[in-house]
Image 1 (cartoon, rainbow, N blue to C red):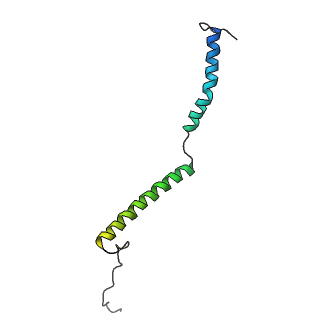
Image 2 (image 1 turned 90 degrees about the vertical axis):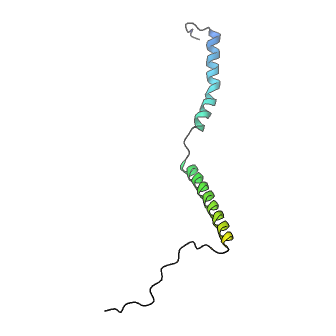
Image 3 (image 1 turned 45 degrees about the horizontal axis):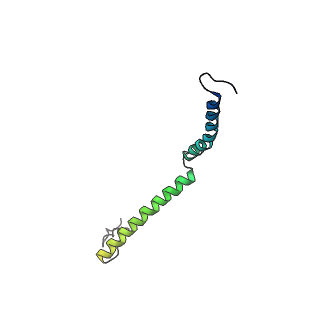
Length: 88
């Protein structure tokens, strides 16, 4: 073992041993810091969208129940006038 100025051989050995012991912990920490994959982001977005849709459905059901009838999801199409001008 090479002697480092100001460090005793036993202290140097403990430092090397500590570094070897910390390496797996540091690798695990770095692995946990990775960006999520596309599939993970997709799953999270899908979960969020489904939760929002469920909340909207619940709110609409409560409104429908309070009003006593169905709430149209699409407004009715405009009706054509009863009499149309004659075509020329």
